[in-house]
Length: 159
Image (cartoon, rainbow, N blue to C red; front, side, top):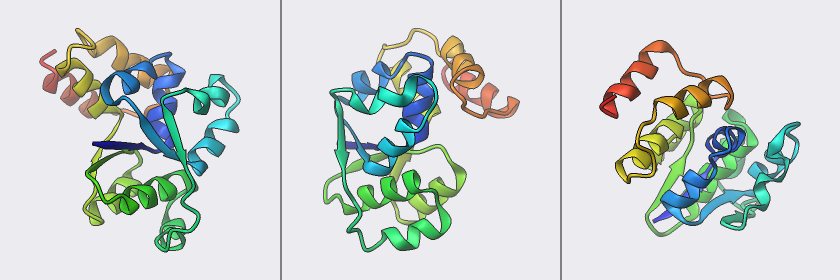
């Protein structure tokens, strides 16, 4: 399965030093050029994340869907969705933003987000517990979580 990521899941895991979870779960992760640009503009350790050898960068500037997506979404989300819709194979889109998720669902894309990555990592035995990583994503990774979502994810993980 081809895995495509928007900026947020990649940046959240990179900020806490756990981008390796994406690589361990999915092997290669595909990103559009707008995600590279967003990561490059970051002031913290994200500036060089796009250089990770398991990331594959794609130009989707010729996508006919892109102008419509750019009306409602930021460039990284729009290009990630355009990349996912251009694939003729089964793909998984990693995206956290609500507007982006709604758009991806309306296009019938299979998606997950940072929390889904955590749960998948636990199921595959890459993490014994997700609580510490979940707290790091919230406190240092920049992932917004309300208390209800936090408890729900821990419950889904059996913690």
